[in-house]
Length: 563
Image 1: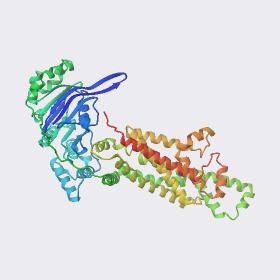
Image 2: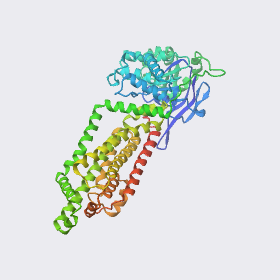
Image 3: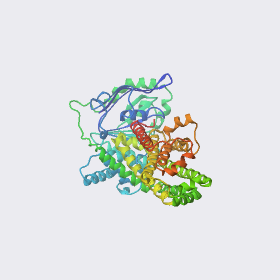
Image 4: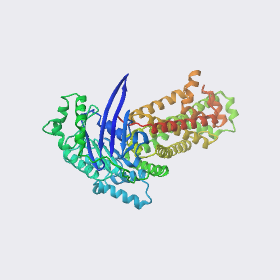
């Protein structure tokens, strides 16, 4: 049995306390199907999130079979199923793949046969067997709602909470979904609660809870609702509510509540019923499920896959064609050195030539670095923010933030490695840059890409929307070139203030420090910017990566439910 005792949920607006829920009292027996209805903004979804443990009540207590959840902790992840208003399935996967992944993430299975059997059982119970192979993106609205319900059934929850799952559906689809929820509520250990604005199909519910401005104004059988509100049909309840103040309706209900509750089953006595809850898989199992799911989504998203391939191919080519004359000069000098370097230095033209060469080498390296920061931004700016709603739902279902973030880091690490190594190999094969240590050169390219990827992943974890994360990440990349000081030297004080935060500078400086010493002399001649030693550049870039990952972890730990 679910009981709410004198529940308040209060927010502050300026200096004023606003009660979104006020003095909510109700009792719901197990094996029960309840609707929560009321005008828009009356607190329906707020109440559901409070029962789910997403929001914390400001006052009062919530009980489950006599256990005080407000003091003794929430139900286990597997005991609650919460179906939000938004889709919680991935469009690029099929119906079966979405359900199978939900099982992998939320239920500990002994072997593949048990995994497949549970997946089949859930698909059957939600009426999805016939469309199990269809991609989610081609499903109708009603089919997507069935899938959302199916994803919550993998743990056989004792409390199934549904938020507006019938909104926007045609009457036939709405009735089918309500009938499905009614069937699911017939489990003797389960309560199904559905928040809805619609007053159709009320006869399928065991009880209807009517809210008005955060107050309970009715909770009883649907057949009595017309009599209680003195209306001809249920659809007239909302206009009737407007004729009296919410507190008057609530006061009237307080007087009549006991008589309406007489038909409900009695409170449980003795030991409450105990249902066996599914065991949540370990972090390693969740990591691999998330990691392989991410790659499957990546390869099925043709737009994203095409963009990544285009960037991988075109960006290194841009570095080469940006200064074709300069590339030729690098090759010519490389063929002549080091035997007659002294002769070059004796002639003024040769000195001028070498100074120009120093600028070309510096510029080509910085161009590599900037393009890799852009790659890093593209890698991760939308990675978490773009699926934040689904992640919050999966986190509520027991997915560990650490496993989720680790799967993102592993996925992005593969992209970063491929992009950076290919950039180094391609440009070096064409330009023949005069590096003493090509391996170190490649490492610094990899680190700057990794640093920007990690920092933008942190931005993605903190941002409210994917568009906001993308915009902030692009701004961050835009500052890399002017604030690096590699092209135009910054004022001395400004350089020291901004340099610690500019990944591009540290990668460029580290690569410059591994250039052949004869070239490095001329590179230093054409730049007024201080060149950090390789070891310091390495440390700072590693710190950038660690800071970005720390911010990302803080971001994924922090709840970001849309109110």
